[in-house]
Image (cartoon, rainbow, N blue to C red; front, top):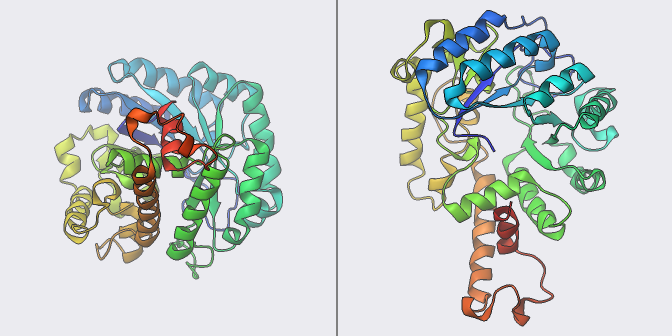
Length: 385
């Protein structure tokens, strides 16, 4: 599990794949110099003392090559011992080799990758040959004992084949995490692949049902996170939490951004690691003030929403960038979030109302025998881990 303090290192914005809905890859992007890693350590050494999760992201971070990680990981691990760093990486796995797998195994690095379902769906959305290349890299990682989980991006096209996609994840025994495709900032038709909020809301309810129907067969991480939000009354993943001042991304040139999604956008540069900015300096940067303004906007705009404590207006990037850096609304997926939070809350209230008294023995109550698993059963599964 990621710590609240999260640093994303972007070794390059380059990527060899050609996903049709991509919004972040830049061909010919430079590779981060190892001196920038040293600057990151120098900056973080004085910045904070609490534990940190460091995720290598992109672009495609494996383009940096094994030599980069052979140098970078010891520098980070040994230079930040007081922060007790843990590591993760998000990669399409195309460049995974036995050498890289052994490096990552030595540092206990879990891998996040991306696959959108069966081969025909994945290759239609991510380009011909994507599926086979990713599965080949997955095989290398798996053979070296690395943990791999997949993000599945649902588009306006693939959402119509949701049953086929869920069945693929069930058949493969994969844990699922999903992203809704966003309107592209680099496409003349930005909504060509984007998943509409109402469709996203329907998808989340469907995946809640599938998660309960197959409670012992699959983990759908987003559903787990959403249920946990409702139970704990606080956000526990970046979309539903005050990520400001706890999450930063560092681009190939050492520039600091509020999140990896902003990397490469000059107007969101908060500083550079070589200058070792303080928390106050980052907060007072133009992007820092914008993030603070968004937080205040949510406090006002969402004041009457019953889910404000654990939703927090959704993702600031989703809310701010489509309007050119001005705050005009919350995350456009607000209606989807509200629908799934309402659904979870409603089912939970019904289950609690219908449940027998605690002293009668929840697990062995005759009134619960034969009933399908519900929200409480899913929360129990989550809590037992």
